[in-house]
Image 1 (cartoon, rainbow, N blue to C red):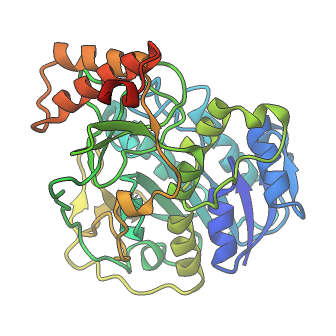
Image 2 (cartoon, rainbow, N blue to C red; image 1 turned 180 degrees about the vertical axis):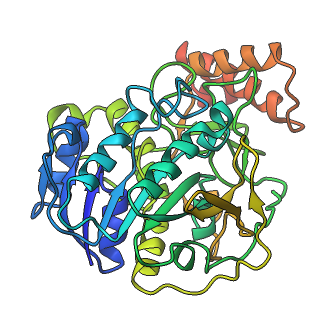
Length: 390
């Protein structure tokens, strides 16, 4: 099957589909730095700069769109599906409407917060549009951790189909959610840019990589290494690997693409490659789903973690966020590159915010943050660990 990728970012969906044996025909991405990555990683493909300027699409069986999440995310503007960024998903349906032969499959991807924002209005708009253009639909929150990667990253995958059954693609695999408990000494990931209302705590993993942060810049989450009294941040190459990409994926391209902050933004906005690969394989070979226990949804409000529908009726689906179970690599064994110690300034900011908050932290965590902060201040003042030991 042939694929068209809109809002392609740095090609997470396309790379996953390529690994699944699908062939992409056209990419479209407005961000110059991301577009330079696409041109380097997919040199044989046509890459268009602006979905709003596309008059039509070539024929293809699958149309994908990881449309902008800024207006739908909890960390973003939360203005909703009609916002200036997330509202661009309307261009997907414009192109479907003008296609001589609309694609059989539509694949949309975004953040889970859209299920709750404004009483679930975003999902109401999207599912209504899918039905208007002749698509049955199903969606599901999928967690990247199910694919053996230590990043707690949940995303909503929406699949629409004109003639096929999207449930047989999206719901046929399920292993159930399982709580992972960290042992003593297991690394913990958290957002050092937060500290007052939450920190995205993750056991033996990092919280979701994201294109922005609480301090207004794209940057790495932090990792606490209990017992070592070390607070470090990821190397950008390990962040790329946490998205299922090869190390250095965002390095080539335009000059501004070599900026560390630009690369963090690109990686944080990417779609996890293993999730896309699983989906690509299921689009080619679907399974079966038993809907006999699925209750019909009538109330307007927040939507469940998974659901399906057509012709104005919708039903909750009894599936977890983990379609498969892959051998899990803990954070300590996954990392390939040395972590970067969190700076004295960044450590001080987080420590101050944490102390003034009402959050509860694991025993020893804030003590280790304080010890790390003192060490970084002494190093900044010219005293090395060797000096202190002497």
